[in-house]
Image (cartoon, rainbow, N blue to C red; front, side):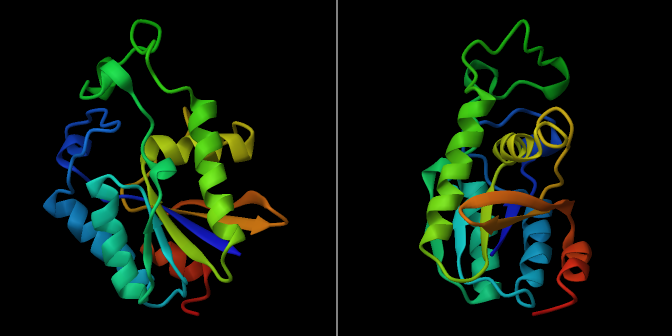
Length: 192
């Protein structure tokens, strides 16, 4: 089974390089366009469902994908962005984890809840599905699955970028990271 793990489209705070955390910031006009382009892929790549974080930027992205895929949408709180605590809203370039961030949600906790949510959803399904989440949360999971080769501290995920996971035997592994729409179609052989 393939899981298409998608970062939501751009928000105004992404454009301003602000840490969003669990702030409920909607998509910008550019983010909506990115989400539409990503959704276009899922009119050609078969998914049986779309799982999403409850934050509006993810839900907006997921609704477009679900509509294009003619697939049902499900909300999963464990796909919510990492809780950045008191640094939420801070510019990324001034964030210093040594000085700030004693109230950050630990990366291992984020990765654990993301993995649990995806595996639980996969266990009850037949067929590939999409999951829409957030840069920090996706990177935490990618870091865990790759043992630090990609993800947090290494990978800057594109807005509406897609990472592909394979679920076999109740375990996840990474097939691809941070793909854009043409790369997804190429990986999937153009269409399914």
